Image (cartoon, rainbow, N blue to C red; front, side, top):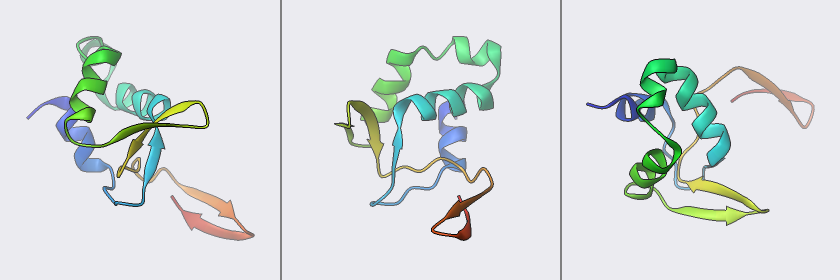
Length: 84
């Protein structure tokens, strides 16, 4: 199983979820570490994601559909704390 597969196991896959590709790449590189991240250039990650998830442009940014990054902590939304 590849490093990308391991990282995707930590992510939430929901039909209504989306995440920015730039945020995904940043989180994946942090997860993989510097040496392994070098083996996964941007084009390779995009190609692997495109086989599993829909990619699209929203607000001039590339997004991955059906995928949410792993929970990173609490955020305030509409005055309430939400685990995201």
